[in-house]
Length: 480
Image 1 (cartoon, helix red, strand yellow):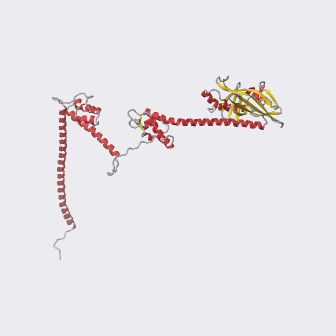
Image 2 (cartoon, one colour):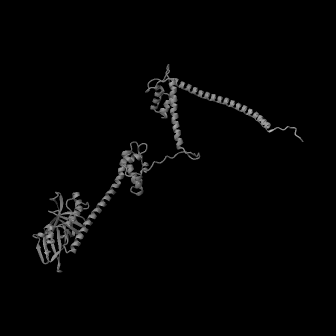
Image 3 (cartoon, helix red, strand yellow):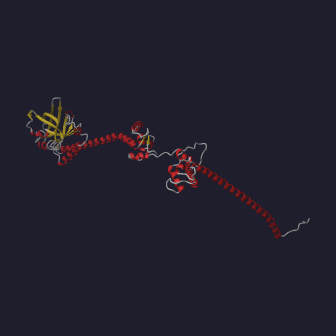
């Protein structure tokens, strides 16, 4: 069946489409225009309302300030003085009760509001309103600062179920060692420039002492309690008190340091003594190998100088009994310290070298074989006995020479130093050898042994110097 609607071409269809679309565009424009009018109307109303509210608030605020200003004014006055402003209840509250406003800040606000220097002049109502605005801005600024600090300190994610208290960051441990007490105090001190027992936990060196057992908790507490406390406190140290406390701790270790130094000195003395005896032993071995006399009677000048050098060092050591007695003012060495049998290990005596021994009986077909000295003492008697050994060179019979006498130890002033010295005095009585026994008073070879200065003494070593020649040495080693 054929349609009753006539057909249209493409151009006609496009024109019809455009006409239909224009109908709806007119409706959208009308709706948009209507919406804009509504928005503008509402926006204008809102702005007018906001301005009205703000203006109302300002008016209300100004009315309140006018009433306050009128209250502060005297009768028949249109201005107020600084003292009247200071009596304003709000100012009094900020300064005296809350402490949030300082007197200096109040003066600065007055000066800026009146454009004056100082607190002279009177404030008008207009200036009072400006003053109040500046006062509000002052506290708004402080509130903003507090808010910024709080925001920085608060975590980015807050758990409302957890307590919001923050733990203060612990102060660092002071690790530097051997700081002066004043410097250490300044690093340990709190905001009041005082140090408590709790603050000592930050002293790293003290912590190490406690860990290593160099100082105990009880010792530390006792030292802290005995230190003078800062005025007005019971358990806080100011700088003077801390320095006293520091020195008390340091004193604990001085004794240990003294012991260490003493041990070191003792070791040094032992080293010198060992060096001396070993050197003398080397001299004796060489003499025996070359058929020379014992006790260093044939040693060279260089060897004598070396022995004298070591002896001079050894005599200065604090463990030399001669030095100890002299330093204490005790006078002469006690006889009991010399009692025993001593063997001569070295002598630089020119007389002994010339006589080839003590008695002078060695020589020719015999040689000096050494000498021992026995010192005896009782309440009433002090006896000495020398035993000199004479050795045959051709395999003949060896024999001993006995020299007896008396001895004493006394203090005399040295001719060389002018200081008191301990002198061992020997008075020979008889010389006995073989079947002979002679009086010793005319035995000249014994002379060098009769008066000697005691220069060094310990338990097993004794060194004597010549009374008229200090370079002459007699070194004795205790046998028993």
